[in-house]
Image (cartoon, helix red, strand yellow):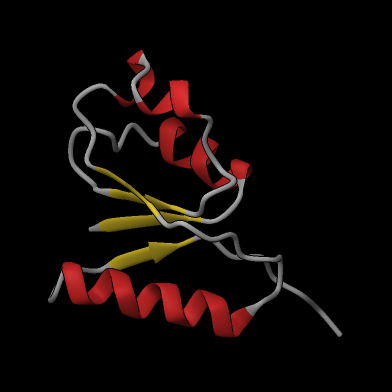
Length: 87
């Protein structure tokens, strides 16, 4: 399994699930501070940081990021954060 977080809340959910030792984490550029990448919470974690951000609700950008992640983790399940909306 691979975890994709494009907001701070998504990253915090990843941490709360205790996945750092087992699930690679992909985040967008605005999710983590540089010092967090080397901090104790992510020690031993496989973290990749995109060099762009994704605006909430930008489904095309999310799909593009998911495609990139799939290229690097072929055959793995990708868990991506999302929110439900009722119109």
